[in-house]
Length: 116
Image (cartoon, rainbow, N blue to C red; front, side, top):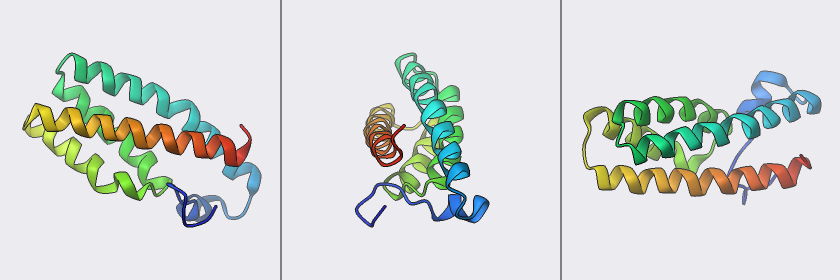
């Protein structure tokens, strides 16, 4: 899991050490939870539901931080803030699109790397 990965497991390992079974368990939880959160985020965007966009951005933030997905670290916080202040719906739409793209790519990498 070199530097070319979209994620980094160092924070995960701070919690569980080098226990591969625990690491794999956290990866599986990520792979189970993130698609549902993305679906809810996308549905909220379609309905222009800024309160739920903010809610799901906040929920995704912890997973993004845990797996150190640096490409989304600032963006997810900006998305949460933009939804909170209801600023620039076009920008929010672009941010959600980027979150989708990056998280789909991360999930594909994790599935490949962990064989799940």
